Image (cartoon, rainbow, N blue to C red; front, side, top):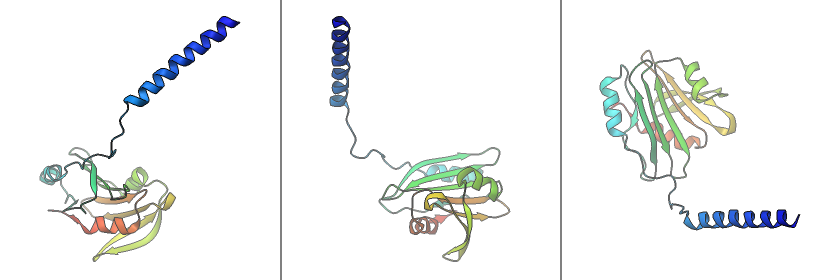
Length: 167
């Protein structure tokens, strides 16, 4: 029995040593989220190909960052832009040639209609979801546009929507 106890102690010390070595070698970056992803070129390329007006912000507040951008030219021609606010709260923009219900099911599951919201003369359908999430939707014959957040307040969503442009 003594050999078993000694073996367990030795193995535990080895594991502890590896764990401490790992802690000493791990460096946590000051900004774990990283730099903003450039989106202007992707937006310009998407605008050249898309059969609908592609929306993107003309500019963002200096402390906001784009953390994801993509355009899928085939099928539903999906445009996506993800943004983090100065408080690292997420706002996502989705445009696809699908119905409002399809976009809501994909990007804002559980959201319930909550009326409309006028942002500088542009009327959006508003949906409120679990955890105080806000989703704004516009449907045109060409495309359905959805702006959604799981963490950003409505004021940030309105700031984002005001900056959207097709050029």
